[in-house]
Image (tube, rainbow, N blue to C red; front, side, top):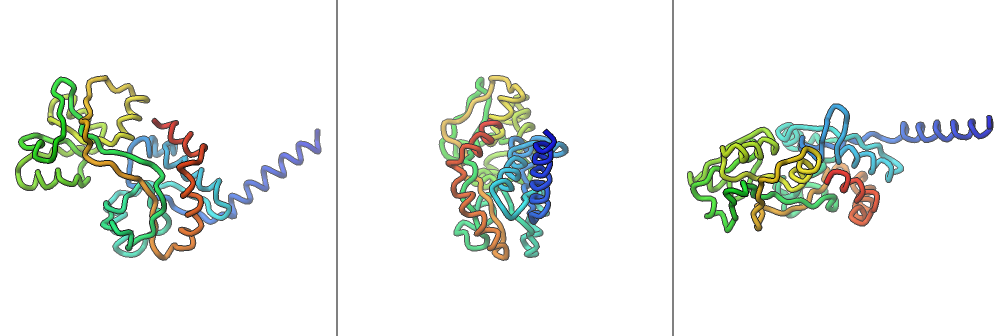
Length: 247
């Protein structure tokens, strides 16, 4: 029994030493919302689980998820001071449609932005002209293609909120005709926070997109190390279980 206990202790210390020897890599996200960040203080959310997943798969790095405001992230990118990775992003959102500015890893999560309205006054999106004269709730600082153009021309009114929970509250209180909410957020809130069954999704969403990970070209060694890991995540049962946990 003593020998067995010593073996267990030795394995435990060895695993701790291995983790301690791994180089820490920031995993930055500007999405302060579920399911990606559920609780920042207790480090709950899909992107915290992603850091653990990548650390486990990597024999070289330890990944640490951190929230960063989008403006601060943009500043770091402008100054070429990005350390680590940015997660949950898409090339179009960072003006890198051709993936020439940054190094982009494969998709880790597929998502959509839905037009949400009340069932009692259901809205169906049929092109941006169908938004004419409507008030549209969205998150302050978010760019919604097409919608921003309608608002700038005075053809629709935008109502800004601090988050997607608040977008749904604006719809519920009839302070906006329609709102834009990510499928990932809506599904999480419906399952874990008991959203009332009063909301309608337009058959045609505002957008469908891939959430990905990117880094600067200076981090090519890190990028090349992660490529084979991330490229197989869509078929990895452990990663799929983590996604299912937040849906």
